[in-house]
Image (cartoon, rainbow, N blue to C red):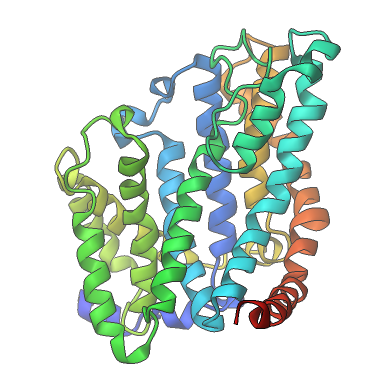
Length: 371
């Protein structure tokens, strides 16, 4: 059977966008878990170079997982805006998805875990301006690497409290740009091909002049890096009616990915292979996992709670191996993530229409004042 025949009989992306037709939730859960695995090596050794697969992948397993996160986010968030076509509704939805759980995590780490593991006495800890700086900087997404006073100073990856959070500001930046593009007509059916062509050009070229060493990236370089993956997902959504998903294309895309390593097109090659591979994996049911992950989305909770738990375990047991650290941390983090979904994230998302209506009502009342 030829590749053309495989493609003709394969589902389109548009056919699997309903949650009961895809396994995006399973993939997000898997990617969050891979970040936890990757960070076990980072935290235990103090460097990501310790990760066994890094020399072969070119980047850490966690970085590859985050790439897939951004691709899937691009698809799902584009669909979210396209359905509502409302900047207010879109903004509220994005805010409620990220900030309630983030606030709980940051406050719990700063005011519950922090004083227990800090080298400072409790009185000095709570008087430290660094404590409140951590809360403000982390919740405003100014940085994901703000330290807490006396916390994890003796760990191998010293002073880092929750290194996963550094990506959130880039995701929010991608959201903001997508909202503006959506208002400008990105999802207008009449402009679909112009929008796809323009977005395709951006995705193909935005990373061409990035420094070879990611350690040299600043905010702008990191943003360009993440734009490739997030807007690669948005581009896939724009082309959803034409994008066929077949395993027959995985090998050619993998070969392109390998050939692009160490070239200017490395990020584009990685985006195409990882993105298409993720969409292909999303067509599989994965047994009962699809239903479980659709009912309980623990992925974000795993992502934001894992770091402090892993660092605390290393504070208690400095000689623990990365494998044991992974297993013990996952056993602790998974219940936390499930509780975060059930008691924080899901109830917050259910407030979406209430918050949206309140903002619209407040806006209407304010118009006569400014008019």
